[in-house]
Amino acid sequence: MILGGLGLLSTLPVLADDSPLKLVELIVCQEVANRSCQAPARSFGPDIEVVTCLSKVDGATGEAFITHVWLFEGKETRREKLPLKTQSYRTWSSKRVNGLPGKWRVEVFDPLDRSIGVVDFIVEPPKGAP
Image 1 (tube, rainbow, N blue to C red):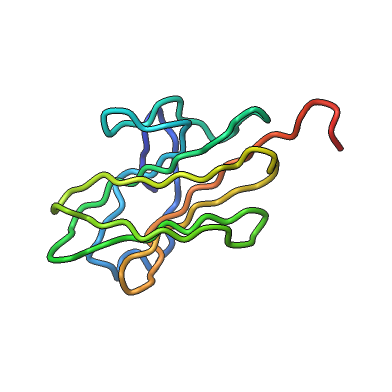
Image 2 (image 1 turned 90 degrees about the vertical axis):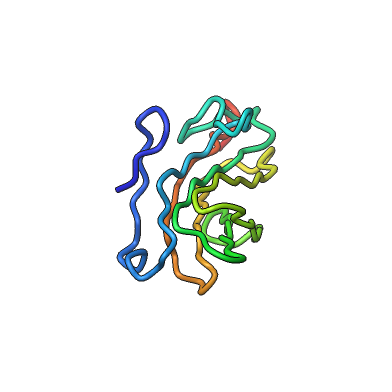
């Protein structure tokens, strides 16, 4: 397991051991300020506009990168390639989730498309919605 900010946990798939990149932090939040997640959570209210996923990765060399894959109800909605500029690097991507209540997931992949981490979160439906 990896430990994120404020005790948020995410599990790593077994394949992560094959990658030289190690995900040491994976958090979803409302925004990133000063390279830190602000208002981290695993459940967001129906009024949330955007959710941001922050990853801290160790082990990068050369022109390394990770890819954030955003899934809504099991279907891919966004894929963003993020460069890793130093050996230990924080990077993030954001997704507009307004009007899309349900189950969300961000999965992180290394350059060889190996999963190195995943974080799940929920966007709550408006009050009185089915």
